[in-house]
Length: 302
Image (cartoon, rainbow, N blue to C red; front, side, top):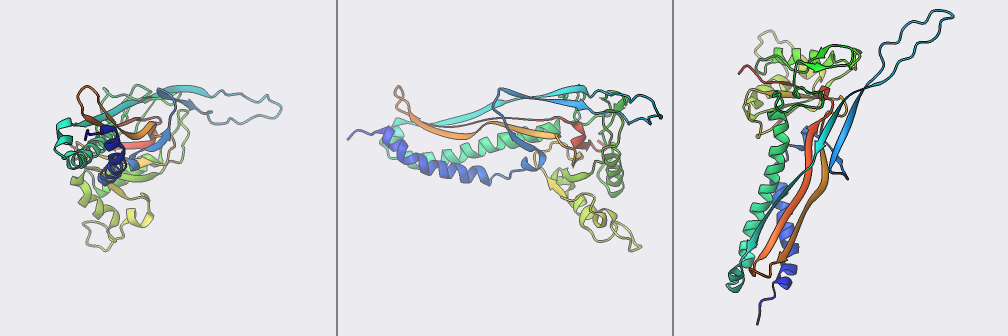
Protein backbone atom coordinates (compact mmCIF):
# COMPACT_ATOMS: atom_id res chain seq x y z
CA UNK A 1 0.00 0.00 0.00
CA UNK A 2 1.39 3.44 -0.96
CA UNK A 3 2.31 5.88 1.78
CA UNK A 4 -0.03 8.86 1.73
CA UNK A 5 2.11 11.61 3.20
CA UNK A 6 -0.73 14.13 3.12
CA UNK A 7 -2.83 11.91 5.37
CA UNK A 8 0.10 11.27 7.69
CA UNK A 9 0.72 15.01 7.91
CA UNK A 10 -2.86 15.57 9.02
CA UNK A 11 -2.52 12.90 11.68
CA UNK A 12 0.86 14.12 12.92
CA UNK A 13 0.22 17.86 12.93
CA UNK A 14 -2.01 18.19 16.03
CA UNK A 15 0.40 16.15 18.14
CA UNK A 16 3.46 17.96 16.82
CA UNK A 17 1.83 21.34 17.46
CA UNK A 18 1.23 20.28 21.04
CA UNK A 19 4.85 19.14 21.43
CA UNK A 20 6.06 22.37 19.81
CA UNK A 21 3.96 24.51 22.14
CA UNK A 22 5.12 22.70 25.28
CA UNK A 23 8.78 22.88 24.30
CA UNK A 24 8.54 26.52 23.20
CA UNK A 25 6.95 27.39 26.52
CA UNK A 26 9.59 25.50 28.48
CA UNK A 27 12.29 27.97 27.43
CA UNK A 28 12.43 30.60 30.16
CA UNK A 29 10.74 33.72 28.83
CA UNK A 30 13.07 36.43 30.09
CA UNK A 31 11.93 38.91 27.44
CA UNK A 32 8.36 39.56 28.57
CA UNK A 33 9.44 41.57 31.62
CA UNK A 34 11.73 43.76 29.50
CA UNK A 35 9.20 44.96 26.95
CA UNK A 36 5.67 46.23 26.60
CA UNK A 37 4.04 44.14 23.86
CA UNK A 38 1.78 45.56 21.16
CA UNK A 39 0.32 44.20 17.91
CA UNK A 40 1.10 45.61 14.49
CA UNK A 41 -0.60 45.37 11.09
CA UNK A 42 2.08 47.10 9.02
CA UNK A 43 5.60 46.41 7.74
CA UNK A 44 6.97 48.75 10.41
CA UNK A 45 5.76 50.92 13.25
CA UNK A 46 6.72 54.50 13.98
CA UNK A 47 6.15 56.36 17.22
CA UNK A 48 6.52 60.12 17.26
CA UNK A 49 7.82 61.52 20.54
CA UNK A 50 6.24 64.89 21.23
CA UNK A 51 7.68 67.56 23.50
CA UNK A 52 5.03 69.06 25.78
CA UNK A 53 4.61 72.64 26.88
CA UNK A 54 7.15 74.66 28.80
CA UNK A 55 6.48 75.87 32.36
CA UNK A 56 3.36 78.04 32.43
CA UNK A 57 4.24 81.73 32.94
CA UNK A 58 2.60 84.16 35.32
CA UNK A 59 0.02 86.30 33.56
CA UNK A 60 -0.13 89.97 34.58
CA UNK A 61 -3.50 91.60 35.11
CA UNK A 62 -4.98 92.68 31.80
CA UNK A 63 -2.18 91.11 29.76
CA UNK A 64 -2.76 88.72 26.91
CA UNK A 65 -2.29 85.01 27.57
CA UNK A 66 0.81 83.44 26.08
CA UNK A 67 0.59 80.51 23.68
CA UNK A 68 2.85 77.51 23.37
CA UNK A 69 3.08 74.75 20.79
CA UNK A 70 3.75 71.08 21.35
CA UNK A 71 6.70 70.15 19.17
CA UNK A 72 7.76 66.92 17.52
CA UNK A 73 11.07 65.73 18.94
CA UNK A 74 11.98 62.51 17.13
CA UNK A 75 10.49 59.36 15.61
CA UNK A 76 11.29 55.84 16.77
CA UNK A 77 10.93 53.16 14.10
CA UNK A 78 10.36 49.44 14.60
CA UNK A 79 11.07 47.35 11.48
CA UNK A 80 9.70 43.84 11.81
CA UNK A 81 11.88 40.82 11.13
CA UNK A 82 10.65 37.45 9.92
CA UNK A 83 12.06 34.53 11.90
CA UNK A 84 11.48 31.09 10.40
CA UNK A 85 12.99 27.62 10.47
CA UNK A 86 11.94 24.21 9.15
CA UNK A 87 12.93 20.58 9.03
CA UNK A 88 12.11 17.72 6.67
CA UNK A 89 11.34 14.04 7.22
CA UNK A 90 12.61 12.01 4.30
CA UNK A 91 10.59 9.63 2.21
CA UNK A 92 12.90 6.85 3.36
CA UNK A 93 12.07 7.58 7.00
CA UNK A 94 8.42 7.04 6.13
CA UNK A 95 9.20 3.75 4.45
CA UNK A 96 11.11 2.62 7.55
CA UNK A 97 8.34 3.84 9.93
CA UNK A 98 10.72 6.28 11.64
CA UNK A 99 8.73 9.40 10.89
CA UNK A 100 6.96 9.57 14.25
CA UNK A 101 10.16 9.42 16.30
CA UNK A 102 12.06 11.78 14.01
CA UNK A 103 9.23 14.30 13.95
CA UNK A 104 8.95 14.53 17.74
CA UNK A 105 12.70 14.98 18.26
CA UNK A 106 13.04 17.59 15.55
CA UNK A 107 9.91 19.46 16.60
CA UNK A 108 11.32 19.92 20.09
CA UNK A 109 14.59 21.19 18.64
CA UNK A 110 12.75 23.55 16.31
CA UNK A 111 10.69 24.99 19.16
CA UNK A 112 13.77 25.66 21.28
CA UNK A 113 15.54 27.29 18.33
CA UNK A 114 12.63 29.65 17.67
CA UNK A 115 12.26 30.57 21.34
CA UNK A 116 15.98 31.14 21.77
CA UNK A 117 16.07 33.50 18.80
CA UNK A 118 13.30 35.65 20.27
CA UNK A 119 14.90 35.74 23.70
CA UNK A 120 18.28 36.65 22.23
CA UNK A 121 16.89 39.40 20.01
CA UNK A 122 15.12 40.92 22.99
CA UNK A 123 18.22 40.77 25.21
CA UNK A 124 20.34 42.31 22.45
CA UNK A 125 18.43 45.59 22.72
CA UNK A 126 20.03 45.84 26.16
CA UNK A 127 23.36 44.25 25.18
CA UNK A 128 23.71 46.99 22.56
CA UNK A 129 22.17 49.61 24.81
CA UNK A 130 25.38 51.58 25.32
CA UNK A 131 26.54 51.51 21.71
CA UNK A 132 26.08 54.43 19.33
CA UNK A 133 26.06 51.84 16.53
CA UNK A 134 22.52 50.99 17.65
CA UNK A 135 20.91 54.41 18.11
CA UNK A 136 17.33 55.24 18.96
CA UNK A 137 15.15 57.77 17.23
CA UNK A 138 17.09 60.70 18.72
CA UNK A 139 20.39 59.42 17.33
CA UNK A 140 21.83 58.45 20.72
CA UNK A 141 22.35 55.01 22.26
CA UNK A 142 19.51 53.71 24.42
CA UNK A 143 21.52 54.50 27.57
CA UNK A 144 23.44 57.69 26.95
CA UNK A 145 24.49 60.95 28.57
CA UNK A 146 23.73 62.91 25.39
CA UNK A 147 20.03 62.60 24.57
CA UNK A 148 19.13 65.85 22.77
CA UNK A 149 16.00 67.71 23.83
CA UNK A 150 13.93 70.60 22.48
CA UNK A 151 14.95 73.18 25.06
CA UNK A 152 16.75 71.48 27.98
CA UNK A 153 20.10 70.63 26.44
CA UNK A 154 21.32 67.05 26.57
CA UNK A 155 19.73 64.71 29.08
CA UNK A 156 21.10 61.57 30.67
CA UNK A 157 19.88 58.04 31.43
CA UNK A 158 23.39 56.59 31.68
CA UNK A 159 24.11 55.49 35.22
CA UNK A 160 27.55 55.74 36.75
CA UNK A 161 30.29 53.40 35.49
CA UNK A 162 30.38 51.41 38.70
CA UNK A 163 29.29 47.92 39.66
CA UNK A 164 25.98 47.12 41.32
CA UNK A 165 25.99 48.01 45.00
CA UNK A 166 23.59 49.46 47.54
CA UNK A 167 25.12 52.93 47.30
CA UNK A 168 25.26 52.92 43.50
CA UNK A 169 21.68 51.70 43.23
CA UNK A 170 20.48 54.43 45.59
CA UNK A 171 22.26 57.02 43.41
CA UNK A 172 20.64 55.53 40.32
CA UNK A 173 17.16 55.71 41.82
CA UNK A 174 17.65 59.38 42.64
CA UNK A 175 18.68 59.97 39.03
CA UNK A 176 15.48 58.27 37.84
CA UNK A 177 13.34 60.39 40.17
CA UNK A 178 14.88 63.56 38.75
CA UNK A 179 13.99 62.71 35.14
CA UNK A 180 12.66 65.64 33.09
CA UNK A 181 10.78 65.99 29.84
CA UNK A 182 12.11 67.78 26.76
CA UNK A 183 11.13 71.15 28.21
CA UNK A 184 12.96 70.53 31.47
CA UNK A 185 9.88 69.77 33.58
CA UNK A 186 10.11 67.00 36.17
CA UNK A 187 7.91 64.07 35.13
CA UNK A 188 7.66 62.19 38.44
CA UNK A 189 9.38 59.05 37.15
CA UNK A 190 9.96 56.06 39.39
CA UNK A 191 11.76 52.75 39.11
CA UNK A 192 9.80 49.55 38.49
CA UNK A 193 12.32 46.71 38.23
CA UNK A 194 16.03 45.89 38.16
CA UNK A 195 17.47 43.65 35.42
CA UNK A 196 20.79 41.86 35.75
CA UNK A 197 23.09 39.13 34.50
CA UNK A 198 23.21 35.99 36.70
CA UNK A 199 26.55 37.15 38.09
CA UNK A 200 24.78 39.93 39.98
CA UNK A 201 21.83 37.92 41.33
CA UNK A 202 23.32 37.33 44.78
CA UNK A 203 24.28 40.99 45.16
CA UNK A 204 20.79 42.04 44.06
CA UNK A 205 19.15 39.65 46.52
CA UNK A 206 21.16 41.05 49.43
CA UNK A 207 20.56 44.67 48.37
CA UNK A 208 16.83 44.42 47.78
CA UNK A 209 15.61 41.70 50.12
CA UNK A 210 17.80 41.74 53.22
CA UNK A 211 15.90 43.09 56.25
CA UNK A 212 18.93 45.09 57.39
CA UNK A 213 21.48 47.28 55.65
CA UNK A 214 23.96 45.11 53.77
CA UNK A 215 27.41 44.93 55.35
CA UNK A 216 26.38 47.04 58.34
CA UNK A 217 26.88 46.32 62.04
CA UNK A 218 24.54 48.97 63.43
CA UNK A 219 21.22 47.19 62.85
CA UNK A 220 20.22 49.84 60.29
CA UNK A 221 17.17 49.13 58.17
CA UNK A 222 17.49 48.26 54.50
CA UNK A 223 16.12 51.51 53.08
CA UNK A 224 15.65 50.12 49.56
CA UNK A 225 13.61 47.23 50.91
CA UNK A 226 11.72 49.30 53.44
CA UNK A 227 10.76 52.07 51.00
CA UNK A 228 9.75 49.75 48.16
CA UNK A 229 11.47 51.90 45.56
CA UNK A 230 11.83 48.96 43.14
CA UNK A 231 8.35 47.44 43.54
CA UNK A 232 8.81 44.51 41.13
CA UNK A 233 12.23 43.56 42.44
CA UNK A 234 14.94 42.15 40.21
CA UNK A 235 14.95 39.82 37.20
CA UNK A 236 17.82 37.73 35.91
CA UNK A 237 18.50 37.55 32.17
CA UNK A 238 20.92 34.83 31.13
CA UNK A 239 21.35 36.33 27.68
CA UNK A 240 22.85 39.59 28.88
CA UNK A 241 26.42 39.56 27.61
CA UNK A 242 27.99 42.03 30.05
CA UNK A 243 28.21 40.51 33.52
CA UNK A 244 28.67 43.95 35.12
CA UNK A 245 25.84 45.76 33.38
CA UNK A 246 22.50 46.41 35.05
CA UNK A 247 19.33 48.19 33.99
CA UNK A 248 16.40 49.85 35.73
CA UNK A 249 13.02 49.90 33.98
CA UNK A 250 10.87 52.87 34.94
CA UNK A 251 7.19 53.72 34.86
CA UNK A 252 7.66 56.19 32.01
CA UNK A 253 5.31 55.04 29.21
CA UNK A 254 6.42 54.09 25.71
CA UNK A 255 9.85 52.87 26.78
CA UNK A 256 11.04 49.48 25.55
CA UNK A 257 8.59 47.75 23.22
CA UNK A 258 7.99 44.60 21.24
CA UNK A 259 5.65 44.67 18.25
CA UNK A 260 4.10 41.42 17.04
CA UNK A 261 3.33 41.53 13.31
CA UNK A 262 2.60 37.81 12.80
CA UNK A 263 2.21 35.50 15.80
CA UNK A 264 4.08 32.23 15.95
CA UNK A 265 2.54 29.66 13.59
CA UNK A 266 3.48 26.20 12.38
CA UNK A 267 2.68 24.42 9.13
CA UNK A 268 3.24 20.94 7.71
CA UNK A 269 3.07 19.88 4.06
CA UNK A 270 4.45 17.20 1.69
CA UNK A 271 6.97 17.98 -1.04
CA UNK A 272 6.25 16.23 -4.35
CA UNK A 273 9.76 16.40 -5.81
CA UNK A 274 11.66 14.92 -2.86
CA UNK A 275 8.92 12.94 -1.19
CA UNK A 276 9.84 14.67 2.06
CA UNK A 277 7.39 15.97 4.66
CA UNK A 278 8.24 19.49 5.79
CA UNK A 279 7.40 21.17 9.10
CA UNK A 280 7.89 24.92 9.41
CA UNK A 281 7.66 27.50 12.20
CA UNK A 282 7.42 31.21 11.50
CA UNK A 283 6.81 34.48 13.32
CA UNK A 284 7.40 38.15 12.66
CA UNK A 285 8.19 40.80 15.27
CA UNK A 286 10.45 43.66 16.29
CA UNK A 287 12.10 44.94 19.47
CA UNK A 288 13.21 48.45 20.31
CA UNK A 289 12.57 51.51 22.43
CA UNK A 290 10.74 54.80 21.99
CA UNK A 291 11.16 57.04 25.03
CA UNK A 292 14.63 56.38 26.47
CA UNK A 293 13.39 57.52 29.89
CA UNK A 294 11.77 54.11 30.20
CA UNK A 295 15.13 52.52 30.96
CA UNK A 296 18.27 53.58 32.81
CA UNK A 297 21.44 51.54 32.54
CA UNK A 298 25.00 51.13 33.75
CA UNK A 299 27.73 49.21 31.96
CA UNK A 300 29.43 48.64 35.31
CA UNK A 301 33.06 49.33 36.05
CA UNK A 302 34.53 47.32 33.18
